[in-house]
Image 1 (tube, rainbow, N blue to C red):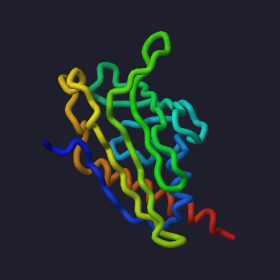
Image 2: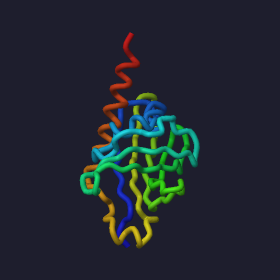
Image 3: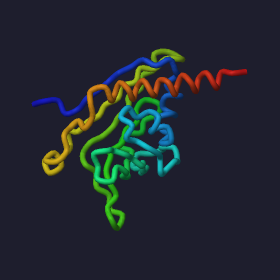
Image 4: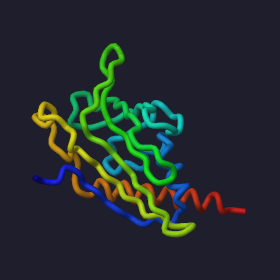
Length: 165
């Protein structure tokens, strides 16, 4: 059976706690995203517990009007080691529907000022009905590494600001 996930790993010159805090802040997700699809956090509260919902405004040129909104549900919250969420939609009436794909960041401290970050996009739980009209993964191979580069830029920029006298 073919793999149903993709991963990328990068070492970042930032402490694990800082890395986790950036990932737990939905307002940073548009700057981290490697596709340009994530636009803005609708729900801006920091992620704090499994089951927490947070919505993001999105844009994709292949969609009829381009703009859409996703709802994410925190599925993994293990500070400062791992954070992840399922992505879905909110239907009329407020019911939630998750498509079976997830994002997960695993963080491993390599000392006080360095972290190994592994980003995994997993679509193994996507049902056949969705696979009929969506191709997985829905982005090119560079997306994950671009996301990790953006995350590293944010973390090192944050470090430079916080270290000023």
